[in-house]
Length: 173
Image (tube, rainbow, N blue to C red; front, side):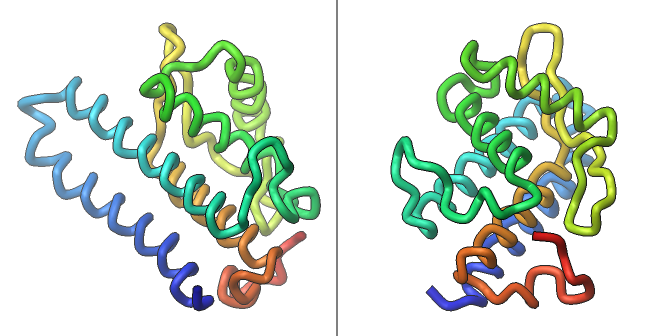
């Protein structure tokens, strides 16, 4: 696949989801406030599922093997956390799976403390939470964050040009 195709896939998917959520929220929110939040969360969760699935395909990820190049990436723990979140949405509709609960809640704690950084070495704001019934609550910024991590990992594996990912910074590897 061409460099631009992969880069645009993750960029335009993020923009499309954000635009859709913004355009429907105002129209439906008053009538279906709680249902709207559940639906929005499921759309975001489904997008995470498809992003991770696309990454598995593009990087020829083999089941049970580590992600190619992930050990060289500053965002290794964050990307892996997204794969755990993916499992929760793919297999339980966003409810924390018992075998993923500790990892996801521990990472969330680090995120809230400001210990998770982006490519500029700045703290990442929390983009998800867990409610009292152990359901994941995603913020729309979660898709943008995952999109950046995906593009960075693709660049590390030579699938897209590193300069197209963060052209104005010499991002950390």
